[in-house]
Image (tube, rainbow, N blue to C red; front, side, top):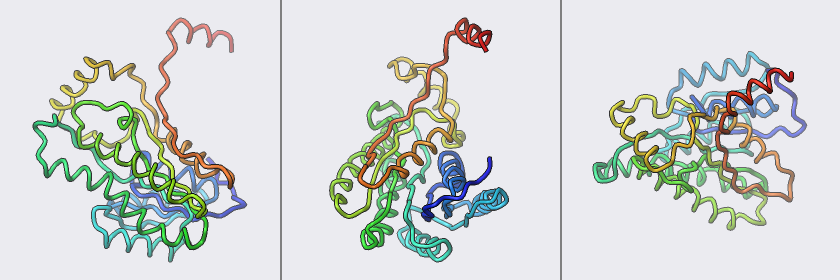
Amino acid sequence: MSFLPHPDRRPVLVAGASSGIGAATAQWLARQGHPVALAARRMTTLQELADKIAADGGEAVAVPLDVTDEASVIDCVAKAQAAIGELEIVVAGAGDLAIGLSYETSPAEFADQINIHLTGAYRLYRAVIGGMIERTRGDIVFIGSDVAVHPRPWSSAYVAAKSGIDGLVATIALELEGTGVRAGVVRPGQTLTGMGMDLDPEATTGMLNDWIRHGLARHGNFLAPEHIAQAVAAMVAMPRGAHMRSVEVEAEGALPREKRSAKGTEQ
């Protein structure tokens, strides 16, 4: 896909850009003409993506980031701004997934998920918000999850963290009114990414069986990371004077086979 010049160049930082939703979002925004700082722990993977974006005519730089380390977050923001300019769009999407029944999850394991998904996102917010307020311009998009609205078993810490993201965004969106800075959350439903692919197969089977038992697995379709990237792009593209605070994106159920066949014969 070709990269298009954008009349309004807005430097972007995407946390968690080494794979999945983060990588897709970085590529999507780069295709719209925005320079993008790719941030994550896997620098080799980030550099490969930066090279791909550059080869396609975009502008990207790879920057190391560990959202569990405040010094790393501050250093990442400084390096990104030195490379592509003052940040106007920040996407907080770093994270991983650990599963287990709540009564078998240790307090340390629970705290790790909160630290990555919630406190890590807050660290990034704190590192960029001062400059955005000073410039009276900026968009911060937090990647949440539909589990904040529809909790699922076997992921108590993840649900708690993503519910916290919803509360955080609701609060700071109010606090930022009149500053020129907008904060929003995109809540993906089940999305086919690399996150969770290294989970224990036995635990994963138990989790999926419980989801089915509670009616939480409606169908087998998954979103693609690009679907979430489009939602993020729509949020930050809202004209001044409008604020898209939250978007929930769910996978569409498949048409019945006979209707798919009929549709094919009509074309």
